[in-house]
Image 1 (tube, helix red, strand yellow):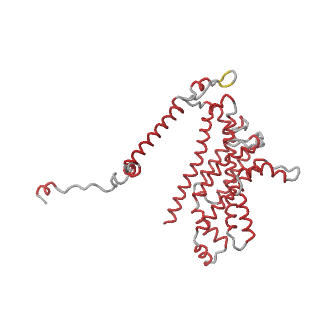
Image 2 (cartoon, helix red, strand yellow):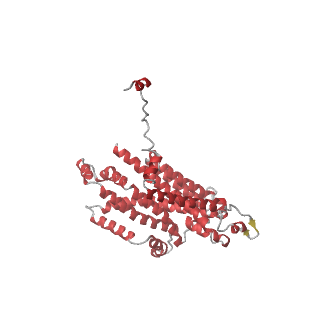
Length: 380
């Protein structure tokens, strides 16, 4: 070491508490994924330009030149302002005018606080059910109590509330009722069918489970809804009439149960045989082996396809329009039946898309977080 270097003291070494930005961090990610080569850079710039142009176009149409409200005229809403910006700006006045009808359907206007409260209860139930500290028997009691409250609010007839028949229900509450009850009853049915299909000691039960799954999966959901709405009442005794919404709910439960059963069966088949053999060696009975060892591992492995089925089932509730039940999508279409608003359907469908996206994206994000949490606990 030279005298000049010794006189100047030790050379400071840069701290390595944080990795260098050239290796880790946002700039490194951009260089590795978007600008790793000339053609990747060109494609990234082109896509970025198209995204920015599309975002600016939507901003200009949906916000900058949009019409948010219109005055009331002698013959209804005066849409002259919307017609003046047609093709250039959105007319969100249709959402303002028809929002309550889209969300609550033909439910009496003065009583729409009741389905609004039901929607809030449903969302609260979803949030509580997503928290692991509530995964106890008390969660079942919470669901039972909440569903009773929802039934009382929707029907009324007691506590001074006006009775509202199911024919007047519609909008978002119908979508949540069909999807929530459908999944709540279809999942235990699916587990039972999946276990029955794998049974080796009960061939009759296995045959019935196979027949059920193949029959339901072999026909479209529309056929089941038509059968429930048109054919099923013909087999009922004279004077016995089951509500149309209940018949549609049963069809959804049977349909979802068959598809979920195959997902659960795939998880059961993916487990090594040693898991069951080890439980048998410990002397555990069948139900303890299945409930404490087999099923938890199987369900953990099929969380992504389960949630994928849940999301598809939630969107399939819109098919009830063919049997005259006004779900969220049907209420949106009906709101556009008024001639003055028929030219502004894009705004209504954007609102419906946002609502569906919020629910489906929430399910997707929760499933990813749950899968990550369970995988981390399993690897400890």
